[in-house]
Image (tube, rainbow, N blue to C red; front, side):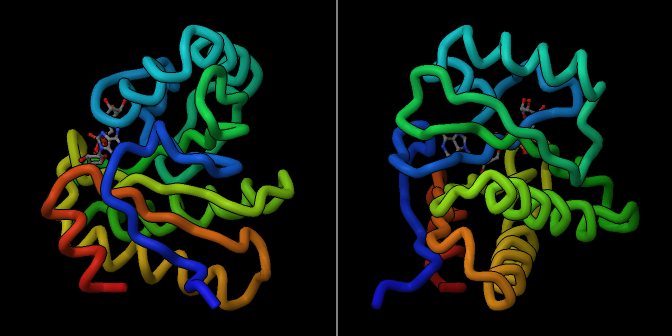
Length: 171
Ligand code: AR6
C-alpha cells in the first residue's frame, strides 16, 4: 500500500488533488511566493472569493485557516493558512506553524476532502529555518493522521531543492 504521506518536487498549482494549501498572509489579499503562484494560476475568481471571506470573517490570524474555491486550478478548493513570521524562535513560532498544518487538515476533513497538498509553509518570505519547519510539518501531519482516517492522502510539495532534500530524508 502507498504511504499516506508523499513528497513531490514541483509546483503545487499543478497538483490534481481535492485541495491545495496556500501559504497566505493575514490579509488574504495575495502576495509573492506560493501565494502569488496560486493566485496567478487560479485567476481573478480566487481573489474575489478571498475578499468575500475577508468581509465575512476578517483577517486570518497566524495558525488559522480558511477555505475558498480554486478558480482555474485542477484542485477543487484552496485552503489559505497563515504561517508565523520567523522572529528568532521565541515568539510561539513552532506552535503557530503546527497549528497552520493541523487547522488545514481539519478544514479539509470538515469539507470531506480526501487528498491535500501542502507547500513548506513559512520557509520562504517568512524566513522559518527550513530544517526545523520540515520537522514540524512532518510531526504535525503524522500526529493528525494516525488518529483520523481522513484526509487519506497527503502530499508535501517542495519547490526548492533544499526543502526537497530535507523532506525526502524525513520521509
Ligand atoms: N509550489 C510549491 N511551493 C512553492 C511554490 C510553488 N509554486 N512557490 C514557492 N514555493 P513563501 P511563506 C515554496 O514565501 O514563507 C507571500 O507573499 C517556497 O520555495 O511562498 O509562508 C504571502 O502572501 C517556500 O519553500 O511563503 C505571505 O506574505 C514555500 O513555498 C508570505 O509570502 C513558502 O514560501 C508567506 O511567506
